[in-house]
Length: 227
Length: 227
DNA sequence: GTCTATAGCTAGATAGAC
DNA sequence: GTCTATCTAGCTATAGAC
Image (tube, rainbow over all chains, first blue to last red; front, side, top):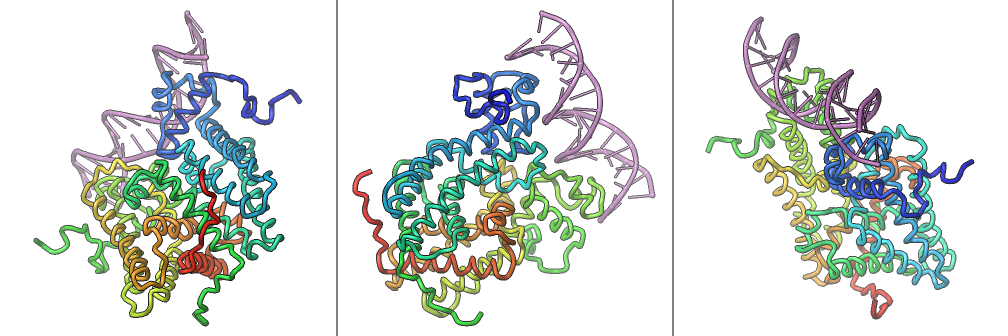
């Protein structure tokens, strides 16, 4: 098959289409703020400095634009999280590095967290099976990488034999949700979410949570026999 | 002032308007699934068995319908979480009871978690300052209750001196996010999110996480001096 | 590759009969 | 309190000139 037929042109890496990239930038910001249904192609076009109809020369439909945005975001994160997985250190250090890389990724592009959470909530029309599958696959690799890291620690006897899915959910909640919480989160913490101090605090919080929760000393919920 | 002027008729408790309640039920389900912008009043009307225009006899606008849905949900949860706050036991037991009550509330109406998270993400037009403020206030009381509970435990020397906002965020992530994660969460855990076993597992997970993370034995992130 | 123009539809909201 | 009918405005998407 001809080169770059499967993936639209995601990993092409080249300078690519300048308009295309700008459309993706604008659309990413808007979709993160208001979701798929809440964004009109008119605002996207205005943000880019084009007319509405010109967008259809770069993306066949609004849905394809949305999926392209999602794909770019997920690939960006997945790439940034590959490094820590290949480290040659003990599981604890590796987990630390992975969590920091994840938070760094969420902070570098503040739209990421919201976009990802929103994507989870759209039980999609998913009419585009090609790009939708690509997104799902990249997401799957991301989760698999983290769980392999956990399993490694468990096998090495460094972590408790926690539930992989449950721990994954807790970590997503503590990271992705946090940086997606917007005004509410800022009201709660009494300051910006993405400032250097706030980010450092969150990193420590998550790492503390994980180290306490994964430590070999079993947490032993004080029972509560029957309920 | 005449009775029930401030709150539209939320706490009226009476049989109220049957149509109104049915509209709220249908709208709640739809808004949870697709968000404010993703729902048309036509589908709401169809779900209720009315015509679109009849909805405007019960709610002045789509926005007011949405806010009424939110208000009902938040009040429902806030009410269910009052009990544990007034328990006369030690902080640990109280925290256990609170977490269980929260999860019970999220499970009893499976739309709750998604609705609440979605509400956080809409950085709202908020044109309706009356009902919007009511929602914010109920939410504030809820958070304040939880944080008072935490503070109580810290003052009693049972919990570490954790950051109240950070811990709040982690708990929301571990509970509300989890039960809002839908298909993704089910794919991850390999089963339903709301089954009795799945719920029991999540309760244990969150309680373990909290007891380990709040325990007096300082978790002591293995340093990582400068970064 | 961007434009103007427009098709075809649905959205939220209103008017007024019953 | 529900209906039919209708308004205006917005939407996604297409056609075709330049």
